[in-house]
Length: 378
Image (cartoon, rainbow, N blue to C red; front, side, top):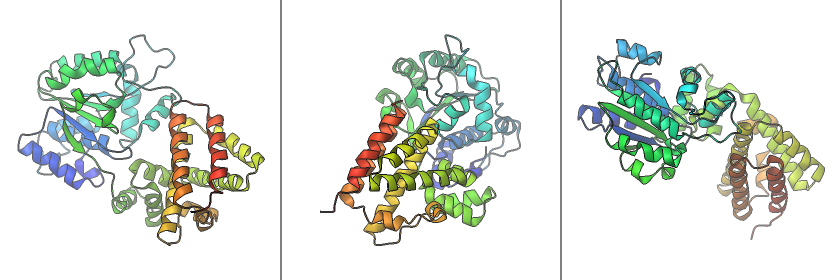
């Protein structure tokens, strides 16, 4: 992957290239930022640049043997580590080698992704993912091997915050003093969950979400119409992964919009039958879609409240297609009940992520919403 293929991140790319030119690029680097960025793709393109036989000022050559191998994800000294969950038929000492073929196919198809996409691909969305101690042993073994190409060895660890504590401790010495000419790139969405002894060993680079204009340009470059790209970017709030999903599967987000519309109508009218009908429909979604839908609901609340505070018209392309007037919904919102509603949705997302009972969680959220929508502004 070439650096030029990654949307935005101009300053971050420049920083990385400058550090290489000055010889100040660390053997352990932590790319961190919110989910929905191109952090993983950037790390892959950066590793390719470091391995390139004829690197230019701003990018890899894309033509040398190393670049061709990176393009096919077959560079012999490129290694990956990532969260996984136990599946049927897996060995006792399960590590990433068991999933490597699936992983390479997955990232070749979509180098910009979120954890839920990967776990859904493995059909383990409802299981707790982690990077276990057997995987730490595998990492150490890989980095202790002699380099095939006679150059640097690369390890990209996706979401190191999923390292089991014993696995994380096992890697400390490797992060501080990696064998040979190894470069370890960690891609984190929640660095506060990492051991301080890990973060202190890494050179850090914050990766921001792209601007809306950058999202639009990227989606258009992928063949979307200007209107479709603008609609997806306006809904995605800078989340590149969500923008791609919305653009590629607008029907699913129309379904989420219809769900929210019916849910709020049932909550506002306090019709128990309608509320439980929504709960059943929501429960039928898979776990990742449930969390995705709740995030979409949360964003809808933010848009409606923001428009009301600014005395603007509440516009949202999904709800415009559904002919659901967000202005009418916004009329029952104010700072007090909206902040409480956002907390309810945040808690529901958290509880579902913790494998709580979805029907109980959403039923509870529904009755709380029913009460919140009746709270009058002070």
